[in-house]
Amino acid sequence: MSTTVAAPRLSFQRVRAAAVLLGPAFVAAIAYVDPGNVASNVSAGAQFGYLLVWVIVMANAMAALVQFLSAKLGLVTGRTLPQLVRDRSSRPVRLAYWAQAELVAMATDLAEVVGGAIALNLLFRLPLVLGGIITGLVSMALLAIQSRRGQKPFERIIIGLLAVIAIGFMASVVISPPSAPQTFGGLLPRFSGTESVLLAAAMIGATVMPHAIYLHSGLARDRHGHAESGAARTRLLRITRYDVGLAMIIAGAVNLAMLLMAAHTLDGRADVDSIESAHAAVRETLGPWAALLLAVGLLASGLASTSVGAYAGAMIMEGLLRRSVPLLVRRVVTLIPALIILAVGFDPTRALIVSQVVLSFGIPFALIPLVRFTSDRTLMGDAANRRVTTALAWLIAAIITALNLLLIYLTVR
Image: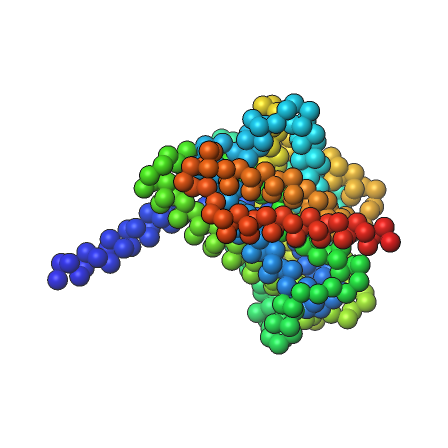
């Protein structure tokens, strides 16, 4: 009798102990549900219906593998991806690499601040510039919590915001379910003109985000430390798989909900060409509560993602250049380009989409060294990638690079 009771208790204790170790992947997953995703996915659904469902599914599968490799690199080597690039590159290469990484970080920050400003405008009719400033100030407060209280409280806040994002964007799909046959039909890979390629590149750039690739190696290491060889490392890597898997399932479901909401509710409406008009159309079609939840989800997305983006930018600079800039100072500097975009009156939704295309071009610079390092047995030991994993990772890099080249060709034409 005692044996029967003890076994479930032991199992529960193991599950609870493993759950305590979850978290880094959920912080990285915020990058996959940022305002750039909203602009790209809503635009794709409104313009092309269910056509690009396959891009969401493919991008999320890519992201799951990439994020696990990044976390594994940090756990096994005790160093972040930017630090390893620095250690294995000459000074000119490091500087050039840092320059492109900073450009990507600026594009990331632009999308997140602009998204927060749009949300505050929808909710409270605040001017976009004022909304951008408020978004920046709130993100500074979140970063201050991370600086003073450590990673765990920061993780809890970000996970809470992720829950708000999930509810906000999935509510419309629950209220008015999309067509199941058309959703499954959208799994067939195809395009329909240059604009669909542009949006596909933006969707992939918004999902497999470069700064999240750099960041996760540091998040995992800082949370769990340098995992030496043995049973402890095996356990941490197994838990990391669960961490990444759960986080990517949530992020993928949110992204898919964005596109399906737009495909089902907004498809064929010529007046839907921005987040603001999509919000108005949702209000008209599904009611004020659905529109309110959409705006709240967008606000949570902007606040969480801009904090995580600034955190990633600081990690990249410290890793590549050994220069440490206080997070709050960096937050102020990177806020300026976004406020300029808002002040000059550039179409904010278009700015979000273009920023995601810029991110897509930065992916190979993060992904190629990640695959090389995690496949190197002298660096990773017996935790090095298996041949199948390496082949899949190189295939991901090839697909993204080919899509970018196709985008350049079609745009020039």
